[in-house]
Structures are given as C-alpha cells and as structure tokens.
Length: 137
Image (tube, rainbow, N blue to C red; front, side, top):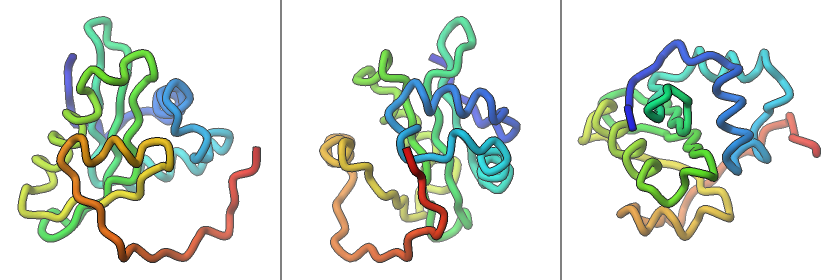
C-alpha cells in the first residue's frame, strides 16, 4: 500500500472511494461542486493506493498545524477494511498535521467501536450546530 499527501485529489476519485466505503451515506456525493469545495478547502488529504494505483482509502483533515486537527473524513473501501489502512491513514494525517495537535473526529455510529481499537479516546462533551443542508436519501 502506498500512502501519500494528495492535495489535488480529484472529486471523482474522492466520490468513488466514499461510495466504496460506508461514508457516502453521510456525504453529499451527488453534489460535485460541494465535494470539490470540500477537497479544495482541506488542509490535508492523505490517500492510500494499492499496487495498481487504485485509491482504496482517504483521510481529509482541517488543521492549524499547531493545536488541533479535525479529521473530517476517514474512508476505506469495504473490500480493504480490517487490513490496517484506516489506522495508517490516521497515523499519517496526525504525523503531517503535527503530533502535538489534538486529533478530533466525529464517529459514524457504525464506526464508533473502531476508534478505541486504534488508540483514540472518547470525549463526552462534543457540541455542534447541524448543517442547514440535510442529506436526503
């Protein structure tokens, strides 16, 4: 597996891996302009590609490189889940953002049990204002 920082990842590839993971259910994959903006405004896009160059995982983060890193997307193709790709994407993201930053994410309900497995701690006081734009399926 090859891991890289890919600031120019295309929206089409990003959408494809979101669909091959379980994350497409909670992302605006039918809104190409919004996906393009999500990629353009990210501070870090870390990818995992197999030997053939196929994108099999992605981590997209927003960070100040000093204090906090918000890991907004962590997607791994379901065919490759359980092989350590997610753990390595998190590690590489945190390394590039700065190990002295606090890495933060909101877990999808189905993935909540995964994060303690890779050494993350649960935080009980997350608060948010939901977006006005709601995904409808």
